[in-house]
Length: 173
Image 1 (cartoon, rainbow, N blue to C red):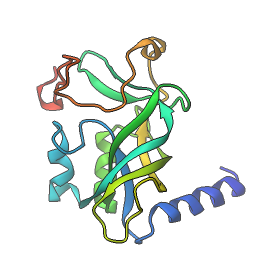
Image 2 (image 1 turned 135 degrees about the vertical axis):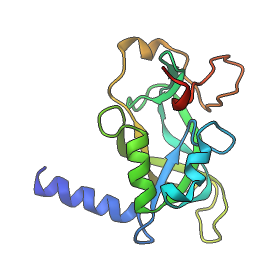
Image 3 (image 1 turned 135 degrees about the horizontal axis):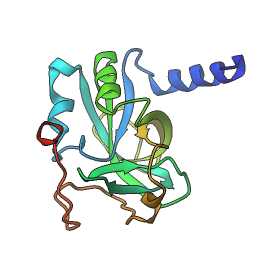
Image 4 (image 1 turned 180 degrees about the horizontal axis):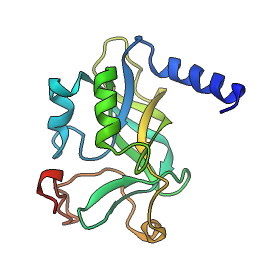
């Protein structure tokens, strides 16, 4: 990594972690409230996660359900698909490390910065609806080419009308 790239990355990281050790993460799939893996975000043994509010990507991305386990994937192809709705959390270093491991980062997913537009926010000093912000997101460049032909979602719901049942890790064989 060149010095200029490192400085840019460090500046972005400091912008994403305004409260020191807490980092903003945008979740769009099974980690959202009411979804099958949300309990992992709330498990104090994994670290600390605080719900901040809802948001939507400023740019379109392909959000698809793929694979034999019906996993939601955010494909790192900006400008393709739809503006994706999800939730923003502030997480501590322990939860960030847990999420990196859970998301198999960096081999399956990569944690990258994404521009968002705030929706309803719970923090008193949070951004007003429609305001821009940045957070990290787990997206992937390691996908099958046919994935771009799958239906692209704006909002993932494991229990949605798509009928594709998500398989928890513990039940996979």
